Length: 74
Image (cartoon, rainbow, N blue to C red; front, top):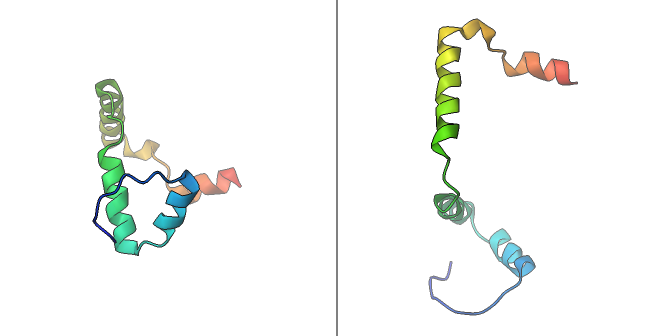
């Protein structure tokens, strides 16, 4: 991967073509960079997830495994 900086404008399709040429390692690094800039998770949403996780710890029998769920979906 070339680390030099340029101000060249490229289309989205050209960018996708470039990304497809990257090695697996480079794609993983790119994914990390993109997710580091992702939108933050709001505190309210974090609280909802934490409450659900706590409820699942207290009542593990209410959880279904993926095999059971996937059978009901097909």
